[in-house]
Structure formats: structure tokens, C-alpha cells
Image 1: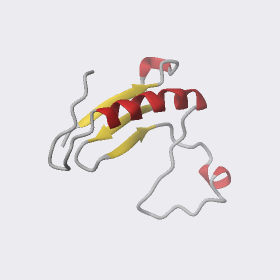
Image 2: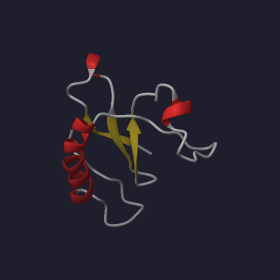
Image 3: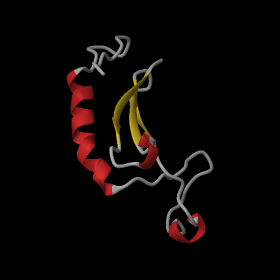
Image 4: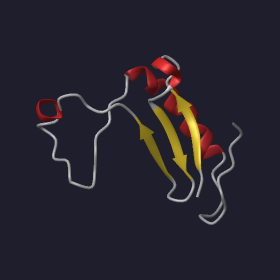
Length: 88
């Protein structure tokens, strides 16, 4: 299994997160983001199962998603057993 860094929020303090990754084994995306402050009131309208969580990220990061997803799809393996290859 390998995680591929797809994009980071360039305006994030300390060049940390939010960050978008691609998991070549599960063929899914992972989003590293900020903990939601005061989840009791902000998330009260969302039913969140015990095995799930919610992270927050700024809208400015969305503009990077199509580039990251496009790169993933362009380099997608022909079969599930073939690893994804991306130039970093």
C-alpha cells in the first residue's frame, strides 16, 4: 500500500494541512484537515457513526482537487492489482 500526496493547502500555516492523499490499495482519497471546533453545536445536524469523523478544510483547497483527481484518473492502473504511478 502506498499513499500519494496529491495536494496541500499552499496558504496553510506551517505548510501543514489540509492535505489530500490517494491510497492506491483502497483506491480512495484521504483528507487530512482540521478538527472541528465545538462539534457539539456545529455538527448537531449530522448523524456521524462511531467509525466515522468529520474534518474541516478551507474552500480555497477545492480548486486544487480537480487537478489532483485528474492526475489520479490519468495515471490510474488498468487493473486493481496494478499500482498507481504518479510523478511528484
